Image 1 (spheres, helix red, strand yellow):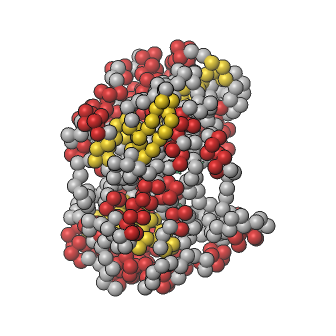
Image 2 (cartoon, rainbow, N blue to C red):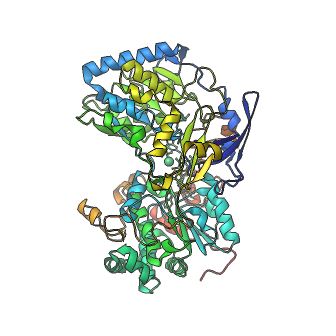
Image 3 (cartoon, helix red, strand yellow):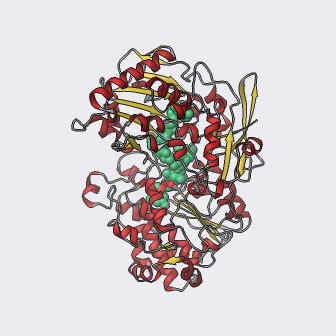
Length: 637
Ligand SMILES: Nc1nc2c(c(=O)[nH]1)N[C@H]1C(S)=C(S)[C@@H](COP(=O)(O)OP(=O)(O)OC[C@H]3O[C@@H](n4cnc5c(=O)[nH]c(N)nc54)[C@H](O)[C@@H]3O)O[C@H]1N2
Ligand SMILES: Nc1nc2c(c(=O)[nH]1)N[C@H]1C(S)=C(S)[C@@H](COP(=O)(O)OP(=O)(O)OC[C@H]3O[C@@H](n4cnc5c(=O)[nH]c(N)nc54)[C@H](O)[C@@H]3O)O[C@H]1N2
Ligand SMILES: [Mo]
């Protein structure tokens, strides 16, 4: 049987699953799909352990102990829904609906279950959540430059002369990219990884540029300086498809490799060599990761990188270009799922999810948040400022409902815990942010205990509260049909029947896919080296290096916080998902911090596995430059 991996990972793998006697016995990657190519990660290979885990929530539960302890007693669905409706009605009567805050992110990437709560909370007039925890900065920078969060199909990197993995921990975070990288390498591509530490991905590259965290924009400007001053640019592409070249050329004069070298922590000669390699051919593919967006200047970094293929014309090469995310390739009208039309005329306040701790604890917030409804997320573990988040979740007067598959840290703080289905137990439609295949998964297992999908639970709540009932009267299948029918050109003609038959269908996009070959969907219709929009918003209109404010480049802060922390994905967990699994915990053994040997020595700690340079002070980072990888195998000219 076929399914789709629901987890928040660009690979969105096409799966082949075996079910015997109502139990999942095997999960493998679908060998027939060009992106999955039969390869899946260890976490999902061991999926039977997650699906049939003793830790699954099987029944609605009510808290009987203190918050955080997780002592719960079983109640009926009826009692749970009645209690939520009654508590919310009372809160709305005294404080207004904005005192209710939904909190969700990407526990499942299935479109029906991801957006299931939006219509209900819109109709109630609840506070709205700005879902910023992952890609917002990266996407903003990319969109400002090329007009869409889209790019060249990464399957096209096979055939490239050069592949650059920029702030992407692919060997852990999206292993199917490594399949493509290996194939590209076999066909002669030179592979460069750009990352502040020696990741397993960097170990598999031909060259590792070990930059200081948050300095990539300076590196890009140095590369641009070399490309432009040495004439290694595609004048014809620049003339037809870009805007602001003359101003960019003037601007990057201030970034000679010698100056950039000090900022990024690489020898000037390495920067020049990389620029010449990049400028040697438009057949260069940059796969950009989300790692860059973890910094205060991450949007600008992504914007700067998006400019590089526009200088060499790589966007117009069948094996060149760049991809940060394929999200906008899926031309859906999400209002079919989210129903903003149900919102009351006086638009409710919007709360940025990363401020959850502050929002739950700020005595001045009016109205205060009196009820939190959590689904598809585990904020106790994933939200910034964890101590404050836990303090907020610990509030006795906060009515917290958590709809979950397993007992998470957040569920321990819930007044009510509701059991959720897993992807193999409900139907959903999946897009991807790493490839261009649309997939449908139908249930292959029955839900355990009394588990219900998000769609079902929001339907129960809508009926109990008497709002948005028409919307929730639809079966999930109908919603999928409506979403497909309202889609734009890239999904035109992809029907529910076809998806049910083929499971995974490539979008109606040309092969090779080169969206920016002639133009870009920006206001000027061109790739914008110079952005009028950014200028109007008070941002630098040209790609500009702005040092981090969170780390050692800020001299004052550097005294108190001399180390720069970066948090790449864990191999065995996915965000906090899987972290409850006994099997995967045993593989991870213990939480681990990697630290540069010189930093560890200074702090009297052992250097652990001695993996170089996760973080360091300014002097140490200069020293660590010497430990950076030299290219192996081939001459580096
Ligand atoms: N196994 C596993 N897979 C996952 C996840 C997981 O938790 N575990 N999470 C999923 C999710 S939600 C996401 S968003 C993706 C994220 O996966 P990626 O797109 O790979 O992004 P990150 O993992 O955040 O970081 C990637 C790399 O960027 C590096 N990096 C950090 N700062 C800088 C910098 O300033 N410059 C440069 N050049 N590199 C930098 C980090 O060291 C890391 O190696 O992975 C998904 N896949
Ligand atoms: N400590 C830590 N913090 C992080 C990260 C990290 O790796 N570690 N990664 C950062 C990044 S890149 C991201 S994108 C965010 C991710 O933050 P989240 O999206 O909150 O990701 P998870 O921690 O995996 O939690 C998702 C939860 O949703 C549940 N779930 C899955 N499917 C369903 C469903 O159909 N219905 C319901 N009701 N629940 C479901 C899962 O069991 C899981 O507990 O976290 C960010 N913060
Ligand atoms: Mo993420």
